[in-house]
Image: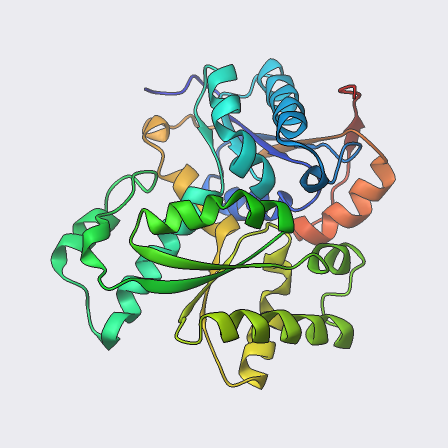
Length: 302
């Protein structure tokens, strides 16, 4: 399948975190038109029922498709965990979530560190395949632990556990409900955030002391990566950190449908939000790493 031209990539999240995925996409696929939707009026998704999350996510996805999107990135861990299949069934375009790419990146990291040696060549061939396809899980044995930091809703869905178990990796998921509000408050480099991270990471490592890989299972968390490195160093347990936002962007860039790429002379981004344009511009600029100059307000209903 080859996507029609021009390439228009939709990125959807319940709020601002998905902008870290867009931030990673921009340099990887510089020839595309991007449309981002933050469903800020209906966040947080994590406190809603499975049925409500699916309804919200599908309505947002359909809106983006109506705007001309021909590839959709579900840059929301909760929506990916609970509604990815619903979205894929509702749209006639490729739809990529954030869970599987993150799990595959954790697998690659585990291969590199297992027993301080190189994993057999069979795994290398798997890594070179389409990143959406699960690598050969049999190359990792016995199972390795991967710590997953995520929201409570994502942890409760067990989406990362299932994806990692399919790769013969054990998942130790840790719900971190305080991190999203701390990030949105702008407390990226703050003693309170460091202390909260120390508590969460100490508890997680107590459950999986041999873990060598840490998967950031929320798109807010890449902004905390320097603080996480700093906290891990302070407790004497460095880990290989996997950014699921970056892993997702790489999976999108490697999608077979992008084999014949359209050549746009300039990259463009269009932003939609379902609530407070001013807040989206203010917080969104922190997540995107550049100013969000124009945001259009839309109403997707309840």
